[in-house]
Length: 388
Figure 1: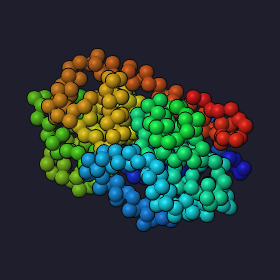
Figure 2: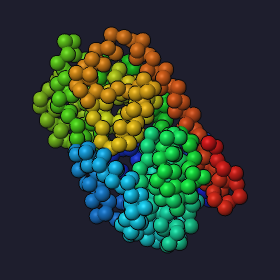
Figure 3: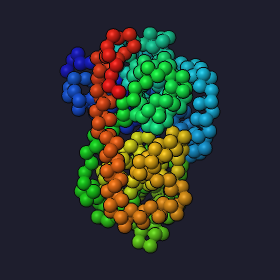
Figure 4: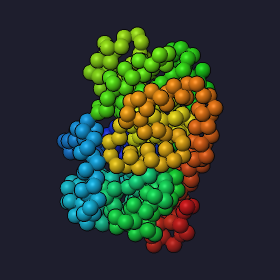
């Protein structure tokens, strides 16, 4: 349909923690206003032709995932000097800013929604220095935290999931009137998952107590072999399914070690079905992953954290009773045994997860994006602010 307002969801495909919420927002906008907007999800740095820059960034992120201490100390360092961090990011991302302004000069989107810190800085710079006319909205996918990688005061508006994340941004220099606590967007498939038995049948799994081990989109870091051995060494071992992501070598090594005792898969595009088939999920609390596990109503057992944002999310979910710190693998075994023998405890996790109201959060994010695309809530636009 020609003439529809165009919303570009700009993201970076480093793991799934940014792409997934971008897709969720696009789906939610379409659900809220069918056919009203032309939506596009873009791996923006790659789509702008900045292949070397994009490849270097993604390789650096994989390196940090394999060495989680670097992510934690890196955040501490940049958060200690937010003004210096802003100066470095603005200069370092100047090529991205210029490329974005050049690309969108002729046919600018009616709204750009970015959900990666690099893009927040680059697109704000494109607007302030290089003539990009599209309004900019930034969705922060760190539910319980925010770092200086996001804290660009020139962004028109930030959408965050919790007051804690809003407070972190404000402390790092973002004006509080540019931050809206709206919620976290979740894809339709996770909000409407299949029944457990149905999901197992689709995946060819036995209808038995099942532990799903998630190793992230890149399948690096952590202790996958030790985790699976701990599960398999239980007196009555559960059915174990491992998703090794894009790490084909790891998938092959796990298959060679465990054979038919463990179901090992590579990257999958139907994660909601795998979560629905599980009774408990083992994995690090990446922003999208943890929220998706909660959406399906399963407990998350966390054997490792990468960045401080993941530690913050784990602590929040622990307080809600839907996640557990199991860096001691004996704790992992104890929680698996406890959940296996206490169906009411599993049901309680489902109820606590439902209390988060992730469908409502997703709808509110879509409503805010739509209102912002229509001009309401923008600085100087004269419209009232969007829903809080």
